[in-house]
Length: 209
Length: 140
Image (cartoon, rainbow over all chains, first blue to last red; front, top):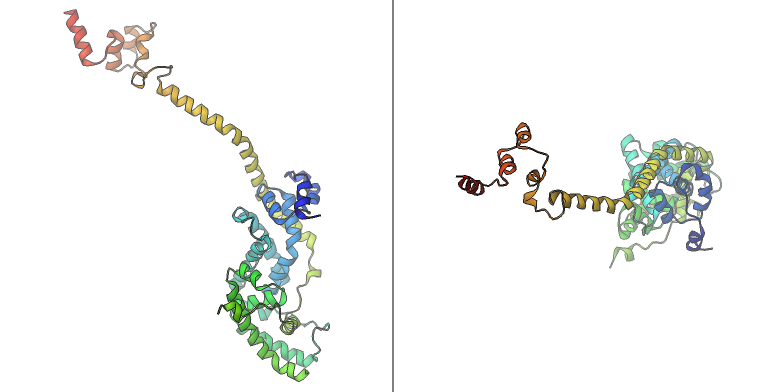
């Protein structure tokens, strides 16, 4: 059933807190724009569905940018509360997830600036070795150090764009909307950052081929 | 040539993605207590949501009453502007009602805080200087 059809069949959600779980079932089938409209009227069930729907991706993005689980969890909470405060300014014809991710990314970048900690300091000590790369341990350590160094040298914006693209799998139009840049600018930054990263990777690729 | 043509959007680069994953690891999604996180967000959001609900309820009550309030306001202004009774001219408002009240005697009026003009109006039925002169001339 399409979202439009299911939306029309759903009984309107009663916004009182007491009927929250029952209305959550109905709200789960509704599109983001409709949920936002209900949240504007104070519908807790609709808000819960939005949280349930977007918190994992938000956490993932926050973690990529902050490197700490606890910080990422705190940021996700703050981002959802910011959504609630700013929800009247959301334009329903736009994508909620892009709007929300923009809040997450901006907050994460501000948090990074505030604590003035380089991301490399927060890198996990143990690198995953579950078949990601056929490199030997020493080579992996060397590669890790080299890539970390290149990432550190990249301008903050390029680092963010690379993480959103390469690790979160976002397209350049998505990143452009989140960061408030043009699509062309995002592609240029990606091109620059990838060039630098490829240069760092080249000796390892040559060695293994 | 546009920048888009220079730098086509080819999606993630598999080699770079794998290398970055190798150094940065994946987000520890399994370590997060999602239910607790959601509960915490809901609890912190409750105040703002309640505020929004009460604002909506208030709007629901006020909206139908608004035309009535406007109509009452307009009627009140018209009533006051008309001197408190239909057909009265604005310049007659207030003082014009005094002579019409037979229960107020000049003695009572003296005891109250009437202006000279109101008192003259009460006694003679005229308050303007020409009208009073005319009355005085007739008495002579």
